[in-house]
Length: 314
Image 1 (cartoon, rainbow, N blue to C red):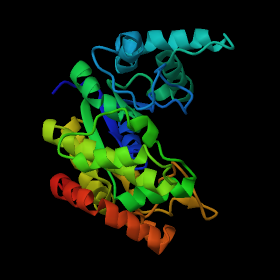
Image 2: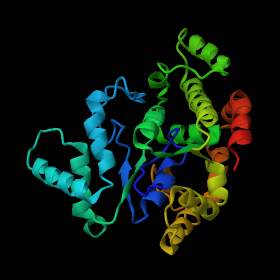
Image 3: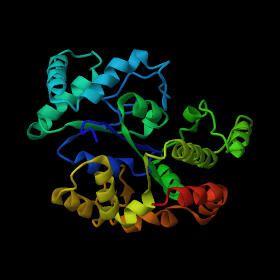
Image 4: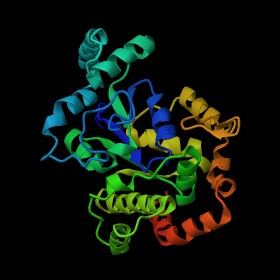
């Protein structure tokens, strides 16, 4: 196995990509890149669409910047990009070159860890539809996260997030999921409510994931519930498949982040805080969702969720 292969951690937002990416990124040989496809974060690519599906036909305008993101796994290129980041720091008003800014930030804030990484890990649910292009172009190893529909939707509602289904509708529905086409056509009629859109969004992500699993069986597919139940077991298996060393420090990090306090502060949800009892996270939606809403989600997603559990259970 090539030690410099990039890693992509993706899946539906709120499916555990941050936890998984952070644990992988704690490995000394990994340079973690946080959501470069996401136009809501500071260090991002200049992509014209959210949930863009990059292909050989449309990637040319973005290729150099993505090449340099992947090159952050090589010390020589990372050092050169850090110098560019330092130079751009003193040019207020200009759009920073994302790979340069990330290299500079690593050097500035984690200088002792600047020299060790030999590969990058991109953690990004917004890169979901570009995962195949990233795998084919850069020989990336891909991890796709899947989570219980009630957990995903409860998290969206708790954080006050709207659905992103509008950005997903241009992508074709995978073969074998004709019912989703009917739902999309129905949505194009009368205005839908937020819950309807969140349910449809989860279905589209899950259907696409199952189609990826059919076409890309060599990728790693992780059910968030399984990861929460046996975090040490699954992270050790993930590290083995990626060719990373599962050290005692990594094991301690997993223990801390799966047996601590709940993912909340003053009773309010916190987006990316992971010191929690991971087992309690699995059924937390039962306390967050009113009964009638939970029943509707379970009813409308039952068939797809059962298929996901059957096909992705490891």
